[in-house]
Image (cartoon, rainbow, N blue to C red):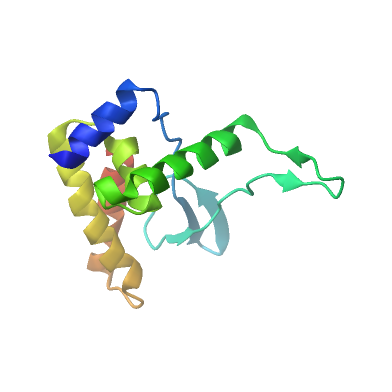
Length: 145
């Protein structure tokens, strides 16, 4: 309850901007052909495709886009609200991103977080486990978690 109140209070003062979350990128190999997509597939491997966060020139000037500046602002806010909310940066960004979702969808996203974490840790999955993981990834994507 405290978390919801703090997020509402921060949003009311304009401190929270919508978090632009990067969807996971999947590497799929089918019949020797490799494709990359934000849509899950069977036997997909999730890869890290995080873009760079801007570049500082040797001259001392900073060349960062608006999105990078907004992200740094959100991170500063999460650091400032950490004692109140008890969330790290990643947890805070996830909570802000999922705030517009219905309560039922947020609960399902939290459940799917656990399912996907277990799936990532499994190295040798059976075909049945691959299908379960695919369905969980697909649902996660459909809910826009």
